[in-house]
Length: 152
Length: 250
Picture 1: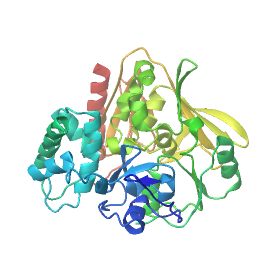
Picture 2: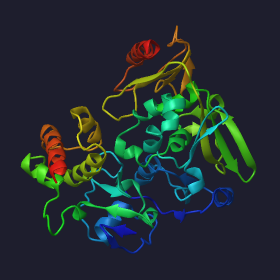
Picture 3: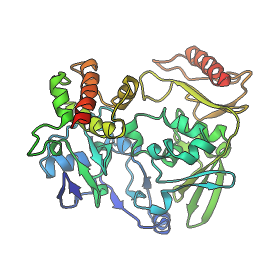
């Protein structure tokens, strides 16, 4: 499997969740684990480019697939991805626990909807829970991320 | 919150999958995993074997068949939601899919997995029933086609046998009006009550142990919803009346 462009070994224990594989076996602790039953959205990663819950996948299922986690967003030449930049500018996070999930869901969403309506934004992030900020700044961040991505 | 120990199998063909299901005791099919993996993480399900069908390319198709559209067992809900053939021939299914959980869940969850899981509040089970669709089940004993009206038995219980693999669902094409409406406590939750309509046919979901066909003129007749802390029987009956009115006006 390829994670953030790097070939990684297959998981050996079938009951290893993909979220735990990323965190414990690869040390990619940016993917957070909240509810572990698919409700909170903190563990959202991209699986072949589409956002999925990594806590609802077994690591063995990722064999041959391409994954992207929050660690892969920033690049050496651009220390912040436009979506990260937007969340920073608009105070779209407070404690930051839910943020990786929101970022990955937003990255995938803006690829499909580069100029989203407010209703489309609300629908896109409805599966991610935040217990600090409320959602106003997060919705604002997604709107700003769309602007920054279009400029980029 | 970690799955119990199980043996993992990733068959490369439908033949291999049904031979595994036929020979292993206490095996479960793993499709999208959006219902099964939470059950494993909570240890509410403890299968000895998981048969992962996600690598079966032969089950990834959406195609025209017998005046309707067939949806293979590994078709993701998100794919079916935007499929041009389904939108044109079976528009109720894409409408129902938009009410299933959240977009991220639908990227992985499958149409057939929701049917096999048979949650009484499932939009897709009600859609299959109201459209008079059917599912195909394969095992080493052969293949059988099961009508929606015969498929759902009770809460998360269908007539599917442990050695059978639900390989595809078939939805007849519709020409008349279709609509689906539901009331849930939060966006993306399972519905407290819901109604799906295809022409003159009406199905209710979330109000009994399985989806039910109902008379649009008297939809609550015979209903005895259970009492739950978040929803009294009277409130549920009220929801049914309002939702049915809404879908019948569509």
